[in-house]
Image 1 (cartoon, rainbow, N blue to C red):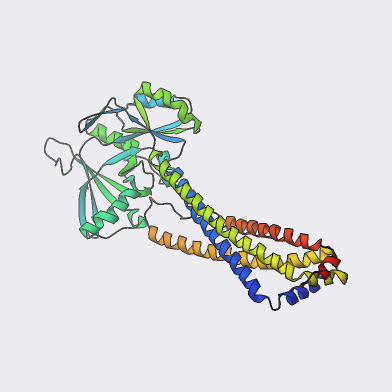
Image 2: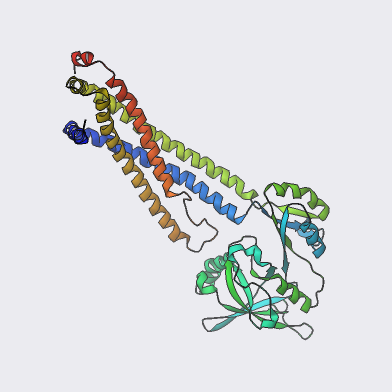
Length: 426
C-alpha cells in the first residue's frame, strides 16, 4: 500500500470523527502536561538545590576548627591553630592542600568614598590563599607591598546582600550591583576602630585596597585579602605569633574525609559538617518531588486509559470496514500500518501539545524566578536544573508507551478472521 493511499484512507476514516479525535488529543495533552510539569518541577527543583549545595559545600573540602568548651554564656577554644598544626594536617594521608585562615588581631576600620561622601565603619579582614576562591579569584590575588599598588580584596556576596537588603533600606542609601562594587577603593585604617579610637600609644597606618572580586563561598565572610597581608599587618602591630581561626582542607576524595577524622582528636581539631543542616531539607524536597511525579504519572495513566478505551471503541465500530479492506486484498500488515499511522498521529499531536505547553510553562516560571532572584546568591542559579532534552526524551518515551498500548489492541483486531468480522453486527 503506497503512502499516498494510506494518507487518503486516514483522511477518509477521520472524516466525521474529528470531535472524538480531538478529545483523545486533548486527553493526552492534559496527561502529558501534568507529567511534564510534575517531573521537571519536582525532580528539577530537587536536582537544582542539590547541585547548588554541592557547589557551596564540596565533599572533598572540609573546614577544621579548634575544639571549644562552653561555660555559661562564654565559649573558649581548647587550643590554638599554629603553623605546626597546619603542617601536621598537611602530612595527613589524602590531604591535597591546606589553607589557613587568619584574621587581623587588632582594631581595624575601613574608609571609602560613596557619591562624594566619605563613610567609615569597623570591618574585619580575613587572610586566605588564592586557590580557596577557585574561579572567583582575581587574576592577581597576592600581597606585594613593594609594588605600591592597592591590596586586592574580595568581598563576600552575602555581605553585599546584607547591605542591599538591610543597611541601604534603613539608612536610605543607594543599592549596589556586583559590577558597581568591583573596582571600589577602600582605605584600611590599621589600629583604629570605633570601639578603640586612635591614641598616642597605639600605632596606626592607612593601607589602600581595592575590591577586585566577589565570592559566593559561605565559609568566607567579610573582606578577604591575601594571607601574607594579614600576617604582615599582625607583625607590624607587634603580634609576632601566628595563629589561625580555622583551616580549609582539600582532600583527594570523599573517602579520604573519613580516613582523616581519627587523627583530628590528637590535633585538638574538629571537622565542621557544613551539609548537616541541609540534608534533612534535601530529603523533604526529594519526598515532595516523588509525590509530584507520582501525581503526574497518575494523571498520564488516566489519559492512557482513555486512549485505550477510545481505541477499543474505534476498532469495534470499524470492524466491518477493516474486514472489507482485507477482503479487497489488503494484507494484515497493511491494515496494521493504516491503524498504527492513525493512532500514531493522534498520540503524537496530544503528547506534543502537552510537552510543549509544559516546556513553555516551565520556561516562564524559570524566567520569573531569575528576575526575582536578582543578586540573591544564596539561592540556586536556576529553578529547574534539568536539561531540556530530558523533556524531549520524556515525551518520546510517553509516545512510545502510548503506541505499544495501542498497537497491542490493533494487532489483536487484525488477527480476527475476515468471516467472523463480516458476520458480526457492526
